[in-house]
Image 1: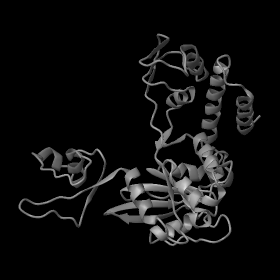
Image 2: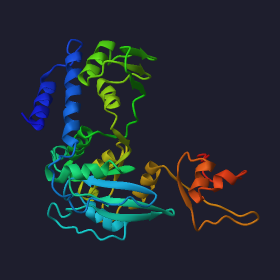
Image 3: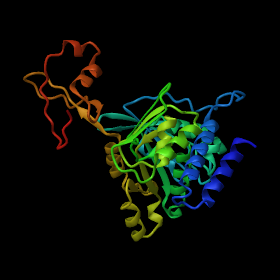
Image 4: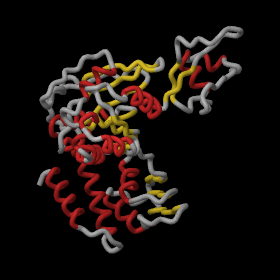
Amino acid sequence: MGILDKIAEIEREIARTQKNKATEYHLGLLKAKLAKYRAQLLEPSKSAGAKGEGFDVMKSGDARVALIGFPSVGKSTFLSLMTSTASEAASYEFTTLTCIPGVIEYKGANIQLLDLPGIIEGAAQGKGRGRQVIAVARTADVVIMMLDATKGEVQRDLLEKELESVGIRLNRSKPNIYFKPKKGGGLSYNSTVPLTHCSEKLVQLILHEYKIFNAEVLFREDSTPDEFIDVIVGNRVYMPCLYVYNKVDQISIEEVDRLARRPYSVVISCGMKLNLDYLLETLWEHLALICIYTKKRGERPDFGDAIIMRRGASVEHVCHRIHRTLASQFKYALVWVSWKKTLF
């Protein structure tokens, strides 16, 4: 039985198992096995052929944004509108077969936008070059999930499922669980909050599935077995995601209002160039970038050339960005904040 067959069998077993107190240990073991097989599936095959062309894109600019979605939802049109790169767009599916990069110039920052080939159902198992597409998406700072507003919620649910199965966690923070394997001493289990999803027995069973018999585990929040498995595996990627609903000119105003009020969602129309400026502002907020301008003593600030940093950066980070030797010779800085949010 191949890995795909084992994954399908475990998924069917989870689907038909009722979730209650008596089956929580059984479900925990099944989820641990499922995570192991999915990790094996993502490992590159030793007998794999040559690398696919177009996916080796060097990271450049101040941030990287991956544009993913099903075929023919408007990704290539969006890339052509937002950047100076012309990506082929047509009315048939799979127009884009490789990764096409472009650059968005906004507030002095260069944001690399990657137009990835359309994802189909089963991409996590390698269908339709799905593994290469998802591998590039894991390197991005933000994912833009382009959706067809006329298709309802079907596309969003399927894409979230595909990304979830390969370890990409959208709009979620890393679980606050301390986990450290040891060479001996058995299992040290503690929690600082009441736990409603995990117990010491369940944690022990999951660890045994991964051949871990000695470890320190400390729960600082009420986490689920899936979140604990993510901490054990350790290769999960937590990134912000913007759900962009395209083609809103083809649906009713009531449906547009409903989609626009969903969390992390923006409604646009590439065909009529609607709401693209608001999408850029929202993308900037999700990237958590800030503009820093320098000024000489007695002169006005130079607003022509900004230093782009991440929100929360310190003066030392800015010094390293200017020159690596500046921080060791640095004495003090005067900082003016023009936003309500403090930068330092």
